[in-house]
Length: 118
Image 1 (cartoon, one colour):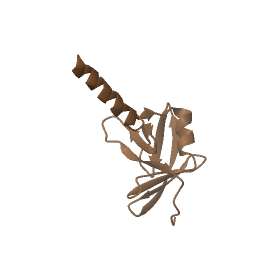
Image 2 (cartoon, helix red, strand yellow):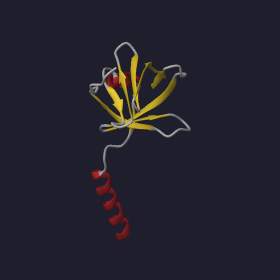
Image 3 (cartoon, rainbow, N blue to C red):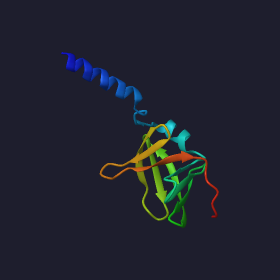
Image 4 (tube, one colour):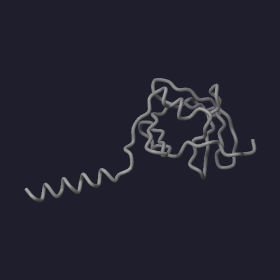
């Protein structure tokens, strides 16, 4: 019985020190989180979410445009000539993940847009 009590105490201490758990954002939260800001991995790509649903795309030295919208608690992105793709948005602290079934998530942070040449 002492072993279980020790295990429970250690587990409780670990949980208290862990970072915030990931949670899924809903429609209005997604809009507030992205509007006027950029989602980026700080190295390879950045998406700037303009008011009115326009999207500036910066990827590996290339510049493009697209559109974005929130639909059914998902963030839908249309980049260039590609079809729109919708993602569940998960967050913990500053970390953001765009998740789509069967794919690895896009991970990054949301921040003020960095100055870039268009």
